[in-house]
Image (tube, rainbow, N blue to C red):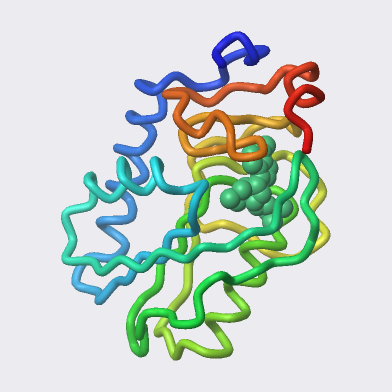
Length: 182
Ligand code: IMP
Ligand code: MG
């Protein structure tokens, strides 16, 4: 598994010190607000676990299972897998996702929340932001790391459901992309 990685971008210790900084800012920004974190599964699961334990606020958590990606290219079609979402009326929603790529996922989720939730505010937090031309107007409010336009895996991020459990973020080798294509 590790031999499929071309190069490591961020080791776990680097990720965790960045999460300390992000958590500190989020804690300040949301002090005395009723906050619900909405985490987008599966990609954000490890990020969520490490980030939320650094935020000492009485927050609530809802997790959404959403899929948009197939292989290394976004399909541009977002599927929401649950029919029911938590009641966030009047609450401040902080969306958590692993990576901002085309922006289609975050945009679709924000639109759904704006239309259906009655949230007091909606902000988003991503671990990674890819340096790409985004077709849609969507920005993240909190960003862990800006990365080049390469396909990365590990620390929750997958390629066809592989590599999520790698304890670092790395660029996937081209030959691994070919071997594990579906
Ligand atoms: P977007 O809708 O194109 O912004 O894509 C967001 C989703 O695509 C993320 O939540 C990831 O699941 C997936 N994704 C985008 N880029 C990568 C990558 O480099 N590695 C793994 N997953 C990615
Ligand atoms: Mg994902």
